[in-house]
Amino acid sequence: MKLHARALAGVLSAALWPLTAQAQTLGGGSNFELPILRLVLGLLLCVIVAIVAALLLKRFMHAGAAPRLGKWSDLVRAPQRRIKVLETYRLSPHGDVCVFTCERRQYLIVLSPAGATIIRDAAEDAAP
Image (tube, rainbow, N blue to C red; front, side, top):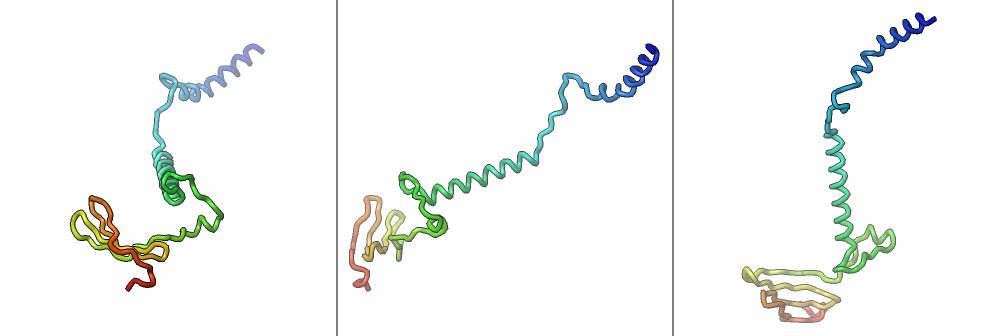
């Protein structure tokens, strides 16, 4: 009986020896291979999430105020603008003339490094 058990153990160890020898390497570790595709896809996903977050912050944040989130229709539709720039002319490298409307009034202003000067302020209906 002992002979059969030893023979069976010898046969099994001989059959399994290549598997155990192959599994053991010097240092116990395997080759380090970077999964390039997973790294590139992860980076691409993070960039897309960052761009979407930046666009949403730009859309819903107003000059340091808390985000204005309303109904779903407000998310899809752009907010109505109160100021409309009609014309802008460059007078010099540092000066501009602008015509714009705000709340049914039309303004003609001169912009310079010293500041902005209102040249004309009139009702929109009376403007030529």
